Length: 253
Image 1 (spheres, rainbow, N blue to C red):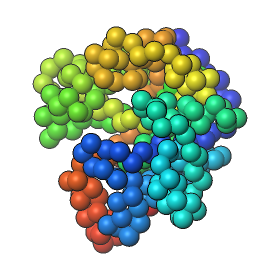
Image 2: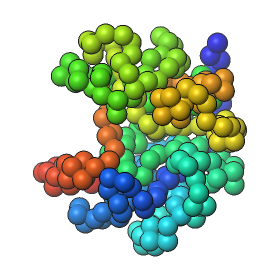
Image 3: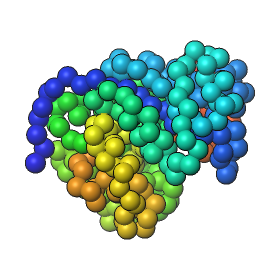
Image 4: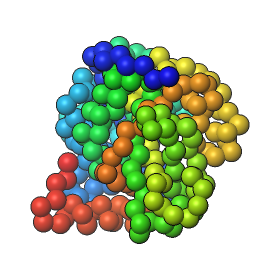
């Protein structure tokens, strides 16, 4: 059962970034907007109110130089991490913050207020992890069958039950279905335990690492949002982001 703690928690954001990308090599330093993509992400995260420190974790000197060039704090990590979460965990081992938020380095439109709400969820409900989900809209019914769109189901109290690339709950009606957004706030102890554990059968089957947390018995609180915060995976995604930045009234950070 979810417990309420209401304890004031300290928090750090760690943004894992790597150069290699099978679909978009050199993605972090794409600069058609006038600044590298990773800088857009960093500037958005900096607008959150509840973060005590913000770090960018990478194994690439080109990224380190770019980050230091725009005034960010960069931490160099090992180059053999299988996932961004493992890279974040390496950095978290040397931090004292109660909560570590993993913000992917290709999400330049992440909502800073949502990051604050993740911290507040952990303070109020005592879960090990908090993450985001948004409702699927009527015009997005095709996403139910899209394996790249991860769906989430959770209790009425916002406790995650399962995540899947398949349509859940059952049916072809998007009403009542939720799209998972891959931003995580971990209690530091939970993150280190997660990273120390081996991938589980469900995690491998779905290729979703959050299922490892559920297999380990860790609890995941789901914070609901209307913000899309879509990541940049392809050249088309980046082109849309560049166009959005050029629109009148658009903010680039």
